[in-house]
Length: 320
Image 1 (tube, rainbow, N blue to C red):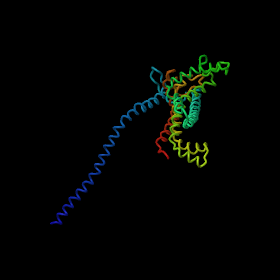
Image 2: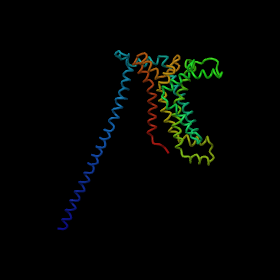
Image 3: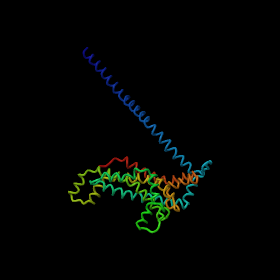
Image 4: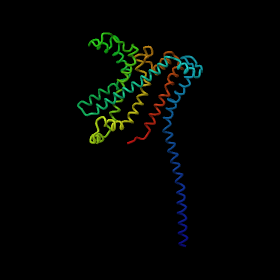
């Protein structure tokens, strides 16, 4: 009797064990389903924002670029005619070259000046905080205010720069800074560099202060010079920051409209015309919405590649 009772208890225990083992996968799958539903619920607002504020306008712009659409009139489907007309237009070809020169030169100068200022401000010295504050002022001023101030500085008659040069006998003639085809682009790039360099300085300075000082001390003990410490210690530690900053700045610089719009309006003779301003004047000035959309989308593949590279770089695990 004792043996039968023991077998019965063992049987009941075995059934309970099997039952609990069968219940666990069901509970786990239920928990996973609930987590998945919660994730979709949390992502839905973001997906809706992307759909209505990014995807829909982008698809609408593509459709608009394939039409001969004027303001106030119905569009007429023309396919790739707008793009073919653009590539036969001398102003558009000059704009493409101007955009490349404007972006590359401005980004390169901002990188060099920003890194130089970051290296200087990273050193301990008196009134260093004051210098940092003054350096970051251009980044805090609104872009339109910066452009208007520099437009006054470059003014032919009442501008500060001409008055300064004539007062101190550095020049006898009035210089048309923004009207001279050989000077206008340089002036616009100078303003862009002045306003954008603090972003590089802040980013690079933050990266420099995150580098352990022990690495420099060890390199100095090993006999490394200042240049060698910069090449073998500083640059490898800042490589990711360099890449991210340059890509972000390239996108911002290439798509910026305010400086050219306020300073030169694309002149003289389209010497400072860039893609954002050409798209603006074509769509709202000439009221050719289809052609304006085509101008904007021509430059999109380059920006898309930069965004893709930036996203892949930011999502890549950091290497220590």
